[in-house]
Image (cartoon, rainbow, N blue to C red; front, side, top):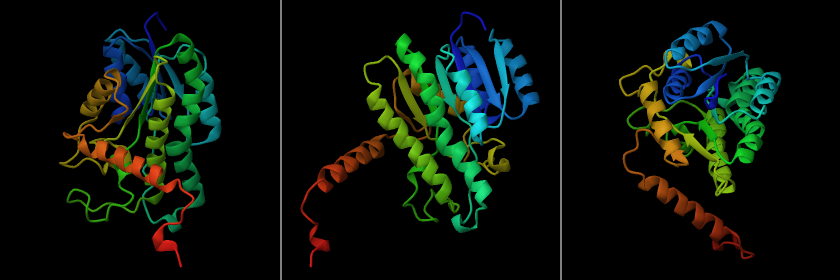
Length: 265
């Protein structure tokens, strides 16, 4: 590594992760590249070297605790300026039919990895008073109550496991953002729609999909601009404002000793 700031990126071997690596390298960062496929990371390291970035390769699977702990140790070294927690897996399908081993792997990767890695990286960032975290969630994080046939003209998959993990990630980022106010450290959660990548076995390579490069561009602009929630394709942010107001109404209205009328008698 050089005297450039350092970004650690999980799921860096392809898709959004690789695009974020290129974006950060072009913006003056050295990189810690994390993914299972070492050969892909080695190719990426050579590509970003053209932008002057030095890369450290960590080839590990973070869908198990041992992998997360290894990467967390690296994140805790004190030199990470930006953590990009991007690795994930689809885990679609009827919940009652998901194999327990697949459930454990998907939940570990989609739900557990980001808080553990953030906890490891944050003390160093807070001590320096700068830096931050980018967590990659999904537009489907907001889809728990959306009918299967109402997804912008597309049929939505059975997704209870995936949505619960990604919705939790959005909640984590929004709550942590409040804790970090005034520290100089920031968190952004990005919620892409369909992305044209090999993720989900290439199922997202459709006409409505956004490129990983555009997602990375929106993500970096959102993070550097201080946004907490990045919705790369949403032109009007009014729905997000209404969501915050609805949450406030639920919290303020439900903290009461009085039983709601519909439950009396």
